[in-house]
Length: 447
Ligand SMILES: NC(=O)C1=CN([C@@H]2O[C@H](COP(=O)(O)OP(=O)(O)OC[C@H]3O[C@@H](n4cnc5c(N)ncnc54)[C@H](O)[C@@H]3O)[C@@H](O)[C@H]2O)C=CC1
Ligand SMILES: O=C(O)CCC(=O)C(=O)O
Image (cartoon, rainbow, N blue to C red; front, side, top):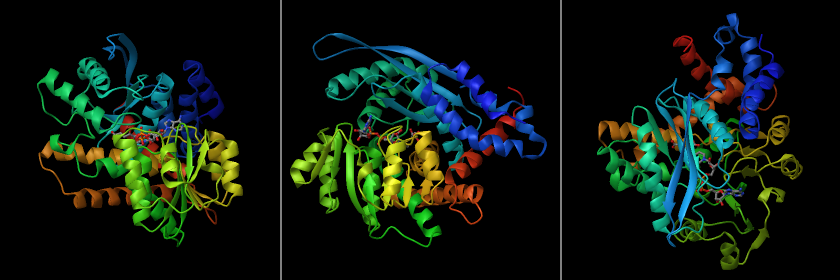
């Protein structure tokens, strides 16, 4: 029998000061240990699967030196955490944000292993990034940074080895710069990065995939409860890639989105963010790279400086910004205000205390490793298209995305259903994802 407290203590000792990583491991292992302890023969403990899974296969850390527009030499740190390739080549995004450190990337890489397993596409888990802050940098500075980062990273990645993509601070512009340098230094045009521009091997619907996939997942949850998205009021946090396309798909399904935010504050638009207002946000965030407060000035609505949207009444909450953006008191406000569904667009946006509160309530609650898997799923489809050198239509990719999200939903439902109570999607996702990774590791022997 695994002793959860003992195992977590050992993992904490081996990873001092890595609170995000410990948080992610503790959340997954809290579900997986009872599952393992109740399983026949306990083959997983016999081959130390949980001890092995908590150690990344390797972490590559390097210096990135680049010149700013004033001619000063700047130094950043970058990493690639190749977490586990038991279910396919390493796969996961790159994050550029000043908060990036080894703990954050290890939590993201760990989560990515189970998420990628849930998609049922051949992808293992990885994550990477840098403490470089793209905010306020010119295109030329971002270009120089990306080129210099790839000058080193190219040695460790490849279409059958490790395929990076975007995440916070890394969008189509950065992927273009990274891919351009990869192609130049390796002299190979392969699908080694995903989220590429459509003119150089990208997949239609990759940009939209995480947000669209989130809404497809929410729709499945509601359908199981004989409900739907029509006329539901939705709180969205963030105003980046995931938030924007979640909003777009939610509007298409007849819902009303009443908030978006960024790291400076939140806009509350009680009339709803319609298509025209969303087009304004796309231009503001994707082109002009401005602040969400400009939306409040433009459309004369409420702006909550320095605040998150979680104190506002609505039916559904979709955290789409960053980790731990819903703490215990935010979760209490959401529950007190009668929210009926919370689905994570971001990775680990709820603290473990907040997550526990949702799980112990009547609220339908979906964890990011299931509900935001649409992005990496379409990345997997991008790799497939690059490999067979054919581009699928938007409709074809979108149909596949819908099928994948529906399959993920059904597996989480199956492993998480509880007699007479709301389905525990967190437990369902943890067990379904774990089983696939652990069974593959077990098959390879004690490597
Ligand atoms: N882009 C993708 O395909 C996927 C992204 N995710 C996750 O979704 C989340 C958002 O990622 P993207 O939309 O891609 O990034 P993005 O860079 O396009 O947007 C990030 C958004 O979060 C906000 N934000 C960042 N840090 C914040 C903070 N400390 N407080 C408040 N707001 C903050 C930013 O202002 C921005 O609106 C992240 O957790 C990411 O890991 C998950 C799956 C796939
Ligand atoms: O598309 C990918 O490879 C990664 C997407 C991602 O970073 C995530 O799922 O968190």
